Length: 173
Image (cartoon, rainbow, N blue to C red; front, side, top):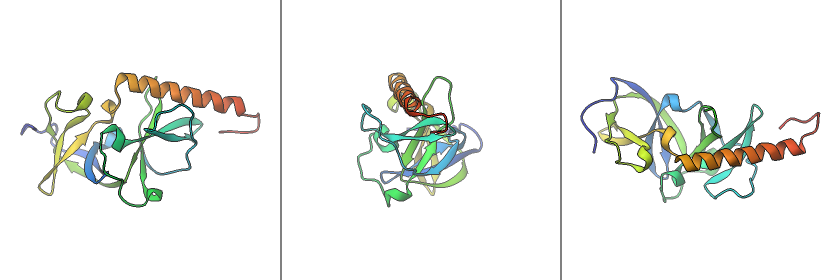
């Protein structure tokens, strides 16, 4: 249930496909759209974490967005062509990339507000109208609970420490 009140007159949103559903994300909440790189397995992480890769010397954890949202339908398309949504760096948090089936478009939208408490951890801000259909507007800041964010930071710290233990003076991760 959304109100008729727009959040803003026009807001750039990124349209994505995840497990057969179209979703929207505030464009400023995505630092970069990346192809799926080769991922390193991490010991002791839950299945929601696919693995990690290095970007500019930092460990980036890759998380399945479908699992975060509780979507159970299979992914669409060839997994080799799925996209990663690299989230902006945030102090004290692990660097994350969300695995999605596809990033499809960027458009200016007039989102409507979803009342607080209507979605898990309020990760759905509202919705945008796309060809007469309401598309949920996801906010990445609240996809993880505080506990999950703390755990992700611990996983990233362990991965960085392990990398450092195997580093040689002439090697870079």
